[in-house]
Length: 77
Image 1 (cartoon, one colour):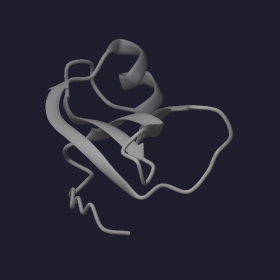
Image 2 (cartoon, one colour):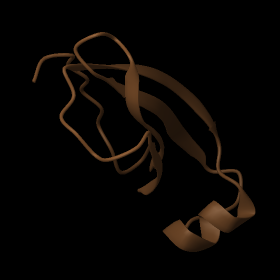
Image 3 (tube, one colour):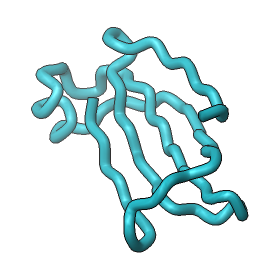
């Protein structure tokens, strides 16, 4: 799994999150990092954690090889 994350200010608790899930071929750099072939298919998840007022506090881009991961998403903490 590869994860890139951005925080708005100090890290603090979140109340909920939203996630967009898609699929795409992995890049050459990602393939090297994951020990996979270029153009293998991976899940791409863009997850944003929200505070109690609905403002984003953190966003993460995740690349998950499809042959290694099962995804279950829940908005509950």
